[in-house]
Length: 368
Image 1: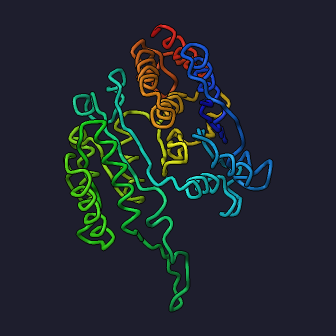
Image 2: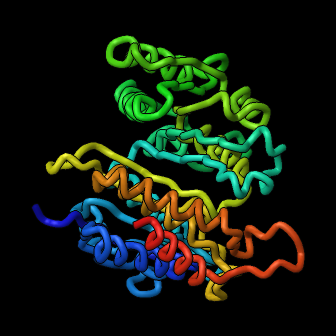
Image 3: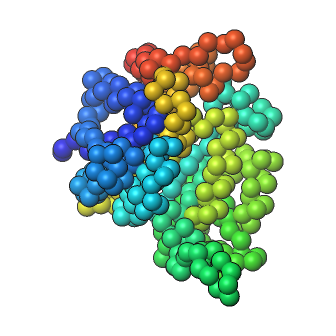
């Protein structure tokens, strides 16, 4: 069989420098574990606009469609704020998600023991936290029509439409149930069925999929506003949360801060299986382009490293090696190594982006 393929789109800001550390790890797995991946690289976001006048060239889009997985760094920066909305760097990211039909966004919120004190919540509430938020990514209010700003009766009106089909709900529900079967076998579906018709349909379809295909999985329902409250009250009550695009955007960011640092958080966006059985997939850290620290060696590469670990697990059928990489990250953190975003007190000396990457590689060596 040919090697799996990975398209790297480092993007803007700190994207290229955190991606450099992932490349070290990809090389390590090829050299030391015979996990060989065919890697190619291209441009996205502001970098693509600078080169081509568009945040995603058609040729790059075609490469993404053919790759077994895409690993993206970050897009955006203040120099692009003056651009028209249609060519802003973020439009490249949204185009990838839409045209690859990446409908299931996986956002894990895991609190490593060594970082439990970094959360804004009490240590006993977050220690050992391991939840997965599954967010529907290609429909809902961000894509619904009609939308726009219109003048009606001499007054400007902003319009966005929340719209879901039962097939869109069913496929993301299946994604959540399948994930739950590999975890603690529990799913909590969150919507606003008390005030929104789309929420009523969401709850109905999730129940139908559960009863027909996944009755072995424990299913509960919760209004999304209560879900936000419960995430900061008792987050460990959850295993897998499945929700729509808007609520998923908000709830996953709330869950992210339970772990103490955005620099620690990976994500995966999955679509339907391709001809080879692998899902269409894009992996990316949650932290954004952080232009204020770009090029200074201050960025934490762990979120991007853990995004590659998700690629190993979900795209390359290398779950044991994903476990190995995650254990290496945990070992480095337990040793006290910290990038600037993880320092607990003034006077501590941070390590650089490249030093963190080197430490993870050393931990991988120690795992052999």
